[in-house]
Amino acid sequence: GYEGTATELVIPQKIDGKQVSSLSFFDRSELYSSRLSTTVKSIIIPDGVKRLENSAFEECGQLENISIPDSITYIGSRAFTTCTSLKSITLPECVTVLGECYFEDCVSLKSVTLPNTLTKIEAFAFFNCINLETITLPQNISIIEPNAFKDCLLLKRIQIPEGVPRMENETFSNCRSLMSIAIPKSVTNIEKGVFQNCLSLKNIYYADSMEKWSKISVLENNDALSSASLHE
Image (cartoon, rainbow, N blue to C red; front, side):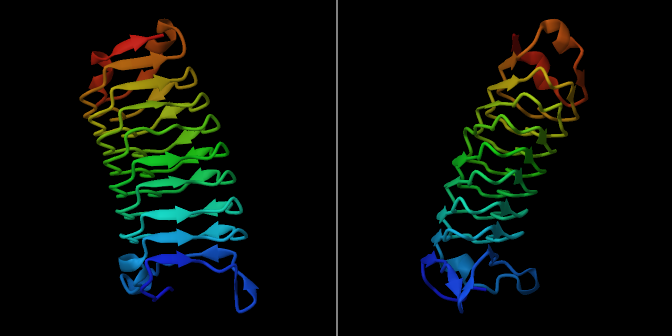
């Protein structure tokens, strides 16, 4: 692990003559032992690195900026969990899965650019991103797992990509500023608590007929749907 005190960390392409191909700065066996979590504000990752492992930058509380090269093809679960100072990030085009708890507790995060290659957002990926206001979901996404956007208190609007078959448990629970959502005709199930405590939801834009909408299976704790206006 890194044990320096610099505020900017530039990862070398090679160490002892060997290509750097993967990175992780978090060791659960020595929690809080690395100074990376208390000093580094900016990280530059060189081209050629292919993997950011699970929990790669977890608990890096001072990290504000990170430059990720297009050579990255895999970013593990919890990669940026509790990066409480991170405000924006752009993910490279080869990433296909947003892992579990990816940005959990990134309380300063306002802007995320997701790659067009993304097909899956796993559980709790954006949980408690309380300052995230907008996000564009790429059209190749077909799976959004439970609690993915739970407690995103400032999220105002979102469009679910065509191809997502169901909205899973508590996906947008407690998104209290959510005013509008676009739901594709591919959705056939809205599971428990997807819109629980979505107190500001006013408009639902559905990509099919009212007749088809009436056939969608809607489970309990989705009262916000009945009080919102439905638009074809």
